[in-house]
Image 1: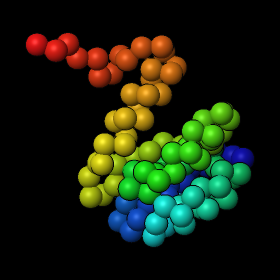
Image 2: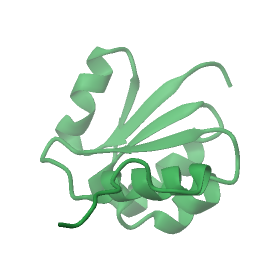
Image 3: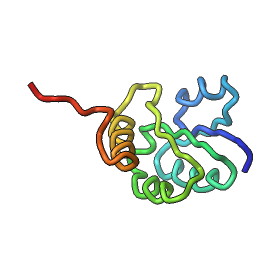
Image 4: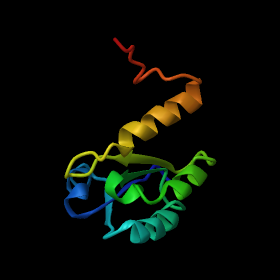
Length: 108
């Protein structure tokens, strides 16, 4: 596994990444993305995954956190974020640091 990077997205979700030299793969739905992610996990160190596809794959993503590679980063889709990116970033930072340093806001 070299320092290879991939993205799995729907249609236009992959265009900017492809322009930056990232290997781009398209999936029409979460089931197709799940199969693709499992296959790509053997060849890539970092895999970006569009949030619209990741929403139904939380079980797989949690299992993949057990291993150091690949690093799976959920990113907003071209249509905009569905909130999954922020939720996962918050949960993972809390897991790593034991506290919420990103979204800890005092209520007024």
